[in-house]
Amino acid sequence: MIDKEWLADKAGMIRKADTIDPMLYRKYGVKRGLRNDDGTGVLVGLTTIGNLHGYVVSEGERQAVPGELYYRGINVRDLVAADSREHRFGYEEAAYLLVFGELPTARQLVDWKNKLGVYRRLSDGFKENAILRNPPTDIMNLIARAVLFMLAFESPEEQAEECHLPLETTLLRSIEMIASMPTIAAYAYQAKVHYHLGGPLMIRNPDPDKSSAENLLKLIREDGKYTKLEAETLDLALILHAEHGGGNNSSFVTHVVTSAHTDIYSSIAASILSLKGERHGGANLKVMDQMDEIKAKAGDWRDRESVKKYLGKIADREAGDGSGLIYGLGHAVYTISDPRAQLLKKKARELAKAKGRMEEMVLFETIEEEGPAIVKARHPRAEDVCANVDLYSGFVYDMLGIPRDLYTPLFAVARTVSWCAHRMEELINSGPIIRPAYKPLYRPRKYVSLKNRK
Image (cartoon, rainbow, N blue to C red; front, side):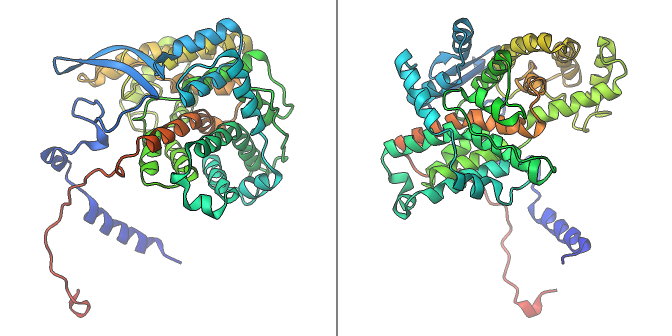
C-alpha cells in the first residue's frame, strides 16, 4: 500500500522536474495546442470530408463571420432543411454523404439503411463479453472497450495486416461500427444501471427498420416508446454532431493513430476516449451542471436581471466552478454564430413547447443573449463570443428524458461515422507517421553512481 505522504512527496518531485516556464513557449515559437498566436489552427493536413467556417483572414487579420458547417461541401443547413421539409430522419443520409462523398439517390438511401439495419443487432457472445461482463462505471470507457473487443472476431492474419487490408474490408468494418454504435451505447447504459445502480437489466433488440435515433430511444426507455417529435429532435442532434472537420481533437486523434498503422478498433477507441474529455465531448455536462446552479442560487431564475447578475458572478469566479467560464458560450472557430446551436435551438423551442418547459427555454436564451457581453466586458481583448451547440444539446437531451450519463456517449454515436471516414481518408492518402517536434529543455548532467547519490 502506497501512503499519501509518499505520493505527495513524489508528486512534488514530478512538478519540479516537469514544469516549464510559459515564456519559453513564445521564445521558441511553440504552437501550443497546434494554435497560431491569433487563435487559428496550425495547418497540419488536408481533408475532403468536412469544414467549419467562422472567420476569414484579411490582410493578416482574423475577421468574424457568421458560422457555417459543411459536410463534403454541402451546407448542413440544407441537409436539415430537406429532412424537415420531407418529414424524414436524416442522420443516415448524412452518414452516407460523409462516408462516400456524395448524396445518395432514393434507391441508394434505402439500400444503405438496409445494410445498417443488418448490423444493428449484437451477438449474444459480444453482448456478454464486451459489455455485460464487469462493466466499468464510465460508459465512454465501456463503449471503447466494446469497440476494442471487436478485434476478437477477426482472424489472426487479419489482425496482423489490419492497415494493409483492402479498402473494402475497412469499409465493411466501418459500416458495422456505424450501425452497431447506438446499440452498444444503449446496452452500456443499461449495464451501468443494473450492475452499479441496482436497477433492472433491460436489454431489448434493436429494430433493423428503424433509424439510429428511433433505436436509441427504444433501447434506453423502459417502455420503449417515443413520439415522432422526440425522434426527430434526437435525429437532428446526431446530424449536427456527426462531423466537425479534421482538426477537432478526436478526429485528429483518428488521423494520428491511423498514421501509426494500427487497427481500426484501436483508432476509433482512442477517438472515443478523446471525446470523453470535458474540454471536448463532455462540455454539455458542464452546461447542465451550471444551469442547475443558476436555478438553485440565482434567486428568481425566471427574472432576466437576476440571471445577468449571477452570470457576472460566474465570470468573476465568485460562482460556478471557479474557472470564470460561462459554459455553452464561445468556440475556437465560431465567432458570430454556431450553426449547430442555431439549428438545435429552433428544434429545442418546438420540443419545449410540447413538453411545457418554455420557462427553462427562456433561461437558456437569456444566457445566449446576455452572456457574450458579460464575457467581453471582463476580457476587453476577447473576440466575438457566441452560443455553441453545447448550450442547447444538454437541454434537448434532458427534455428527451435521456440521462446525463448518456450525453457524451450520444456524441460518440454520432461522430463514429466521421471517425471512420477520416480513417479511410488517412489510409488512402497514407503519408509518414504523424510526429510533431518537441524541443528538449535540459542541462547536461553527469551520471552519478548509486553509492555517491544523496
